[in-house]
Length: 172
Image 1 (cartoon, rainbow, N blue to C red):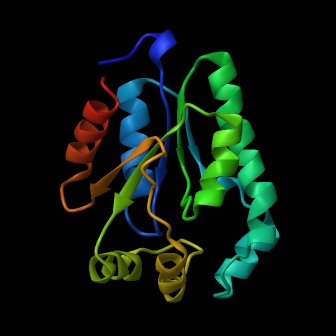
Image 2 (image 1 turned 120 degrees about the vertical axis):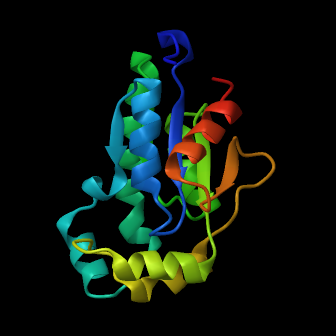
């Protein structure tokens, strides 16, 4: 099913590292026929080096990155193409930065048990986010508020089922 250009949604697939944001977002973008972007690709080298060294980013590190991501969403909204973006978007104020450029964005929060997510992170290779930073992400996580456009999905089901659930929530 591919929505018309007038209904192409903007979705941020959010959550802590290791929940499967990229996997779900790629599948969702493919199903929707919209552009995909991985927020990690927008980090400046200094932020990647900081995280690789086991140091969490602070809000000053994140602000220019979040504005860039918001610009990506806003340009997709302006062009009418829709889009799916991965971004941890752990705090309300981070989501507010993204929403400022694209008020209609839907946040698809992938949520999972700390033990399960810790195991997933421990098994992956080639990613700059070390398992030691997972606790800091859970500590920073602010769940979606009732006034935020979004939905929460537990990561137990296979990614394809999560995409089906997302499409249903999006009304597609």
